[in-house]
Length: 336
Ligand code: ATP
Image (cartoon, rainbow, N blue to C red; front, side, top):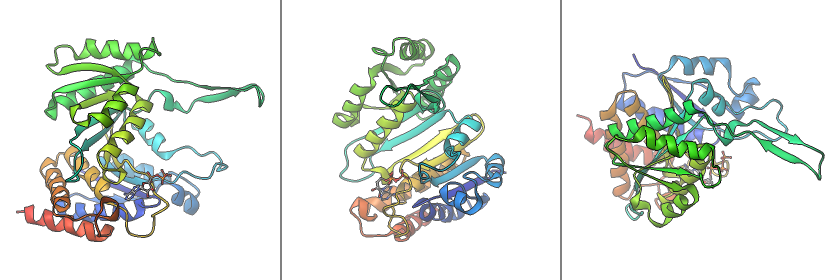
């Protein structure tokens, strides 16, 4: 039996995850959803950013639905991002961010960004040499054959099962002539004969083209930091952060979360856009083998928006709860 772990976290995560849990209760009432805590609020209440019982809940679950975390003040002792820890601990090496046109007047885009999630410049391994005024800041950026190969194979498999036709690789092999060059070389070696159209671009040119020609992209495969930046650019092209879902996928477990953060400026007002978290929920349903229900949810979100419903950031008039109500109504129409 499948299990879902739902973690609201901080800020608007606390308003959005309960809406997603409400939707799950309707669309997959047979699947148990366990709620637990993580983040700054958990730290303030328990002294831990990632309490043991939350880690246990994640271990027991097949998939995790997560809201957002507010970064703690700079002087917080021994802070380690719980999300980075989870990605590493459960080897969630593939970050998947689909960007599809969802607003009726938005640009034509139907792309997916696949980003290596465990290596590269986000290692957090840094040190400072020398004294202030004459310092050198050194960050380790590690890529490995194993890490490169598994993300390339993941992208190929993703493209195959999702009926995608093209993969473009984003890199900077003109500057990073060993690491990124190896990434590019291995991409062509491994992907040859896949039947997919393969190409590669410098990541800066790729970012430019996502803005200028969003319609030309299918699957974009890239490394950790490039993917982080380019997917926010693509999210903006696709209509904004409130609309963009994501998944962190590992060998045995996956975590689904909206691309946006905890948005402290609007937290507690009940006006946050639930679209990104609900689309993330649809991806989760697909992952746990409930594709039909995932499609039903995504179609309901799209239909609600097409009928003019939406939150303020989308130009609509509804609050978080009211918009979710509309999505649920649409969903119920599609439930036999
Ligand atoms: P954090 O520090 O947690 O990353 P942030 O405010 O720096 O928070 P985001 O949470 O990504 O970064 O928000 C960036 C902007 O986008 C904010 O102005 C926020 O209000 C807006 N925003 C983000 N998510 C949503 C949403 N779901 N609905 C409406 N507006 C949103």
